[in-house]
Amino acid sequence: MKTITEIKKLKNGYKVLFNDDTESINVELDIYFKFHLKPGLTLDQATYQKMILENNELFYMRLGILRLKKMQTEKELYDYLIEKGCMKALAKKLMTYYKDRRYINDQEYAKIYIDIKKNQSGPQMLKSNLEKKGIDLDIIDNLLKNVDQEEILTRLISKKITTTKHKTKKQVLLTTKAHFLSKGFQSDLIDNVLEKTSKNMNFNDAELLSKTFDKYYLKFKDKKSGYELKSMIKQKLYQKGFNLTDIENIFIDKDVLS
Image (cartoon, rainbow, N blue to C red; front, side, top):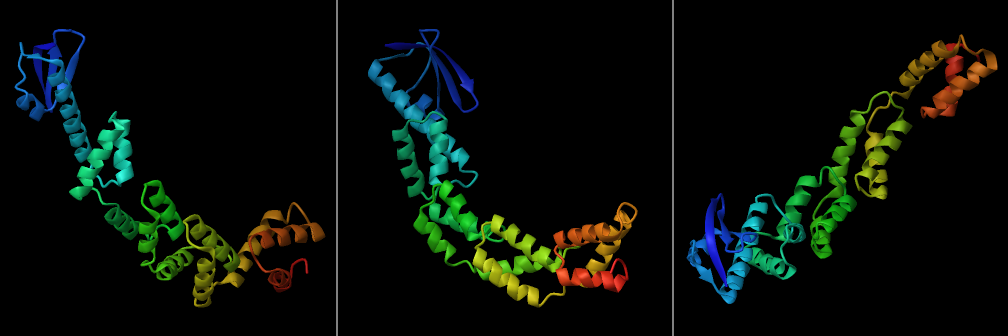
């Protein structure tokens, strides 16, 4: 038997204290009215346990709905409720409730996620991220089939190349590929798009080589001379991605160390 000694109003319900001063529970508004709670009321053990079970369900129901102000997958919401202390059986029951009312829908979540992220990440990264969120693989694969990866990658690569400055063609292609590999795009598709895109773009390696040569020559000419100076400049230029034949020719063109 438990006798209520005091009730305090809370923002989302009431705090109920019992004759054992160390025991108190926070009850939802619906529970407060359903069980007609008031100071002096005595509850038998069966009624008390029934109240606790119903109160827990309403509490975690409300907690889940508040969480759903931000889109959630079923796994994300389930894990959140468990983390907050919800029993597994109740969490599963609540997932069924939310799904029946379409409060959560993994198919819709994955569709919206891919639509938003497809211009930032490739299919491999999208798939990995959605898997971590608990989305079924069949859902992910079916949605990704409808995404034109080549069209997206062509647009992104063109933009990336045009904004890359002070690099040789070789450097641009290497750094661009590395960038999109890190974003989860497929290697062979990146290569194909790079090959098509680079054919229609002008890479002024000759002008860049001339400027870079001048920079290194001025930097090292007072520190090294002759063969050592030429070897150092050649090495630096090669590391920058310039062609060896073009490097040899620049020494002739500049009439320096040739």
